[in-house]
Length: 144
Image (cartoon, rainbow, N blue to C red):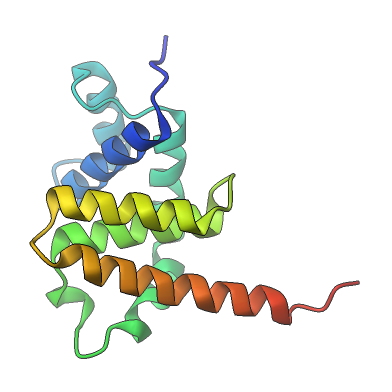
């Protein structure tokens, strides 16, 4: 039976799984399965949905991130920050709840915990920019 986690714990465990896949330790399927068997950082259904959305829409997510990197490239970003931003964007775009503020706040808190001293500011600014553009795009959509 799957362990039910708080959303915060589910996001953190999904981040740990996504971060580990950035080191080519295995496929997403293998990492999710290992996390569930090991039990230290289990990925629940919510975390798995974030991971799958991030993987399935990686090109679209990166296309949103890249033009907002003033003076940076994707390859130069700290791995922690890039992983957190990708997961948060996946949640903002493809998550069930569609609560960008929550996704941003959780990513910032994880950046404070796992990132460098000022990474959280970068994560907050980048995600805030994406969220503002998403809000403007949704306002520009005609209502039938």
